[in-house]
Image (cartoon, rainbow, N blue to C red; front, top):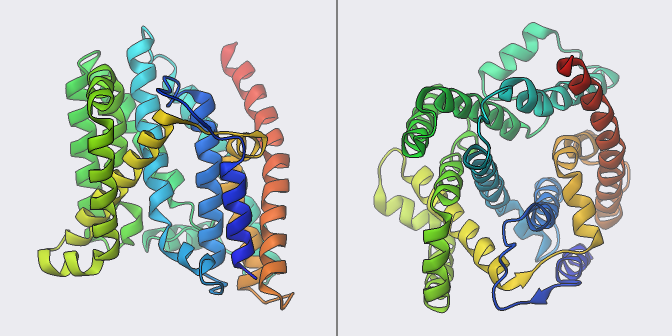
Amino acid sequence: MMDILVLIFLIVILFGIKFTHDNEEYLSLKTCNSIRGILALIVLFHHIAQRINSGYLFSEFTKFGFLPVSVFFFFSGYGLMKKHISEEDYSKGFIKKRIPSLLIPYLIVIFLYWLMYACYGEVYSFVDMLDILSRGYIIASASWYIVDIIILYFVFYLSMKLFKKNNWLIILCNVIFNAMLMFLFKNIGWGEYWYNTILISNLGMLWAFKEEIIIKFIKKSYYLVLPMIVLLFGVLWGNRSLVVKLLNFEFASVLVTTIIGILFTLIVIFISRKFIIGNKILNFVGKISLEVYLLQGIFVYIFIKSARIISSDILTSLIVIVLTIVFGYVFNKLFSFILSKYKKLIAR
């Protein structure tokens, strides 16, 4: 029965899809928004599948967590560099504008998680939360990605201030910092998911910087390169553990995961060059993808992790999905209202 959800998911993705000779809007805001909708649903399915391991196809989503995050990182890096290139002084007001757009919703959601846990008799003090963070965990379930992105924003801002319009040095600075961050997280014992795809944000920056050259290459060799990427992805995906074992060095797992994440991201981009992806459902979910990502852990905990209120796997999953999307929409409106007030305040 759980595989019905996979079927519905595929129908939603394919509904309204159109083939085109060359989609020049392949990384436009509209296209990226539709792709974010798909990726947000994959992440949601992934976290449900970690708790409800049933269904032949649905259970496979337990393996997919880092794939959508890879594309999210790419989009973040691409968007930052694209804005930096196109705007005269993108760094001006960057910290006041960009950081709060993530940090304010994130702090509100952390409070919601704190409130939820308190209702279940687990009251965390500020010191408790810092202690949990020191061990690589956050009470807001699976929200490590937001922390990474906030760090990425700070580093990109500093690199813009240091190197102005020297985009090569900006990218190099971000690569070096991300590599240092990977070593830090590894040495303090934080989970590999904190850092195994973060370098893909730098691929997004490079893509934005050299997009014209890259697109010329893609146009000339699309039908040669895409099969090679898909083949390599399939080989590495199917033999991931074996390849890591053969490489046999400390960061082998991270390297293989990063390469797989890059290949998956390239497949998504190549597909979006030939297909116009998007419909009302995907656009809707894409617009609330941040809220879906932040809030899903609450409903997974209430309906699955803490105690199984409903015995039916598919009914429980549907309730989690529907509530996550409904409350995602509600909190999207709330966050938009709060951020609009904040922007008026800083504009004074």
